[in-house]
Length: 114
Image (cartoon, rainbow, N blue to C red; front, side, top):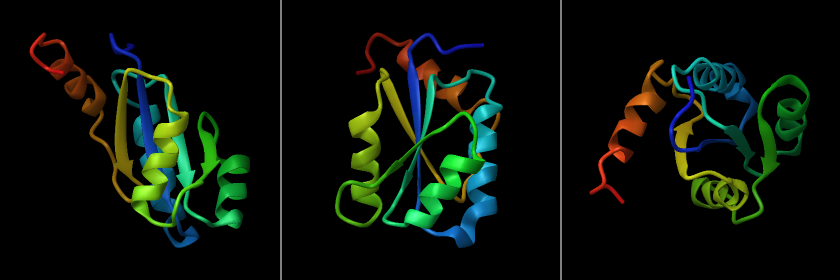
């Protein structure tokens, strides 16, 4: 199922110590009841992790944080490349409920939601 609005999910990562968590986060997005149009993994100033994401995770766009180091800069880097109507952020150590994007999309069906 697809969202009625296009959706990008941005996941920011910074350390290889959380690799298994990152894989679980990405997998949880790839198994949503409403699939996103794109998944962007932003790697915060860690070239080794960026290469690992690019070579080992399929179905994601992997980019380097082009801003100041830290979560704010990484999120801004993700926003800069996201192309969709809705941009959702998920932490690299979180797993989204299977209907997370579906429930998020419900709010946008109300004409009073901006």
